[in-house]
Image 1 (cartoon, rainbow, N blue to C red):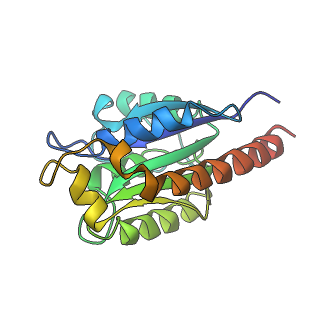
Image 2: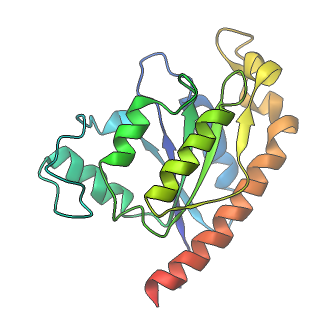
Length: 194
């Protein structure tokens, strides 16, 4: 079996987004591992329209070339780590739309999360897991939450320090998330290829 490939997906497209900063830290940390390959995928690079297909691609092929390009990209991966803010107790609209733009590409693959905000995007991550279940993904237990004082230390509205300055608070969670992703990516990949 080939080494599983994991996407770290930046789930915000706002010009003033923060998600790129923790996503790059997560990518660099993940690249030190040898049990999976990792790639950063930025939703901002795909210019996805609001979902406007006749049906989910679970039932019929999508027609919009931008949706098809997104589906083809995410089909390359064996698992996904979503980097998400919390907007009104949920994930970003851009991330929800991106999840809705595909179906069969997500099925039987693990998903994890890094959430950031006052409560570490805990409610958004829980909602993301529920969406993942409906898309037949395998939500993993461990997640990274950048919350409260740690969040203000690294956010531009606070001290704007590097993510490495809070590594003692979140590094262990990142490693546990990676362990979960590696195990489930191998297991689900083997099952899909059987």
